[in-house]
Image: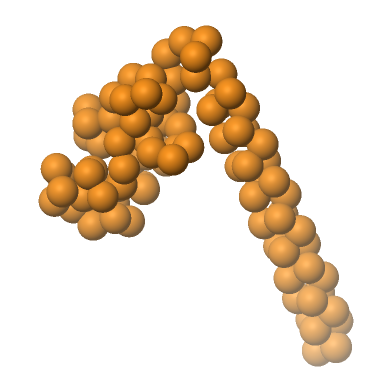
Length: 91
């Protein structure tokens, strides 16, 4: 549903505020729809669907940012897992 309102190309990107105003749904629902969309929706100072070479630097920026974010999440989960098993062993 959301992808119908997300333009192609970085130069046409739209903000989440714009999507809120157009769709009249909660921000969380917009993020969920974007995450589960069949389209590759990139957020780099706005949402857009990449379409050509002019969007490559924005795709690269997105990949680097999300990879770092995923690594940080993985690290926190591993620490929580270690804590869980440490406490569980004491039972």
